[in-house]
Image 1 (cartoon, helix red, strand yellow):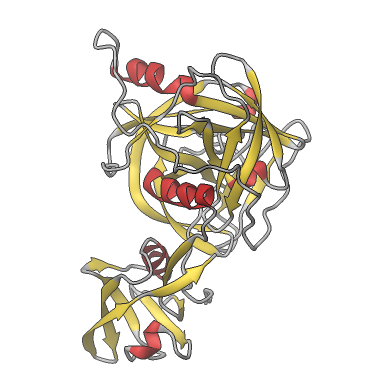
Image 2 (cartoon, rainbow, N blue to C red; image 1 turned 180 degrees about the horizontal axis):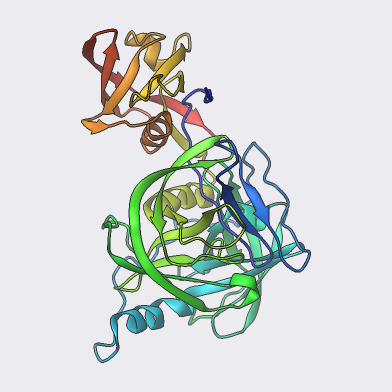
Length: 361
């Protein structure tokens, strides 16, 4: 039985640098990730507690391009999408390795994975046109593996990625992954969305990620997963493998989550997620759901009468098949949101409404 820390809800992302790849090993316990490196270079493991560097002063919240880019109708769809999205994708160099990222505001903010810049305050940014700039790490949130970098003195004509903030990815839709695998910048690979909201361990957390078969290799971490409209739908994060090689199972952090976290980092605000206040595990005998093994005193769960031995089988009508799904589902909600939980208590199913508390990470 694998106990999970209290659902004090946060989320996470992950990825591989050109000198780093984060992989899920099928032989590893949930919550663990093995790393593959090339050229003898590694990026240090993230610390368990999130950190934030001092952000550049700004009187306004940066704006991003959410409208679809203009695509060339004379080109094949994949070609047109790559042509539209590639200019905003950058290579990131730290003292210990390489990774990827993409510009998401016209004043030079870059989204990437937290582990790509772990331990660094300053990085080197290489734009799609080959020009180089200094970048300041504004802050990171390791519970979501999201980091924000600010390009110092960016060019006036800086390419900006378009973000698909309002359209959820669909299973089966075609996508491309853009990044710097093994240091080969501006590399494009193609595939489909295999599933959405796949619970993926990130450190001690679980995040509902986009699963794709678009090849993601060491160095793609922090790069863009892009739809056929040329819009970013996720941050390329990690792969599942038993050998260290790409097996066609990669994961990306959804862009709406990453953008939400990035805005809080830029504004210097704490990143908060919903908090239920239970410890969960797998039910016995192959039963679906999340078995409650502990209820924290004074928590939202305690206030509505959740008990040890309860099995949570649905959240707002969505079936919960595992404790990982419960964790990722709760962590995708905000403090103050009210949820309806379907709970098996002995032979009886009861419905409980609970208002989530706050877990600042």
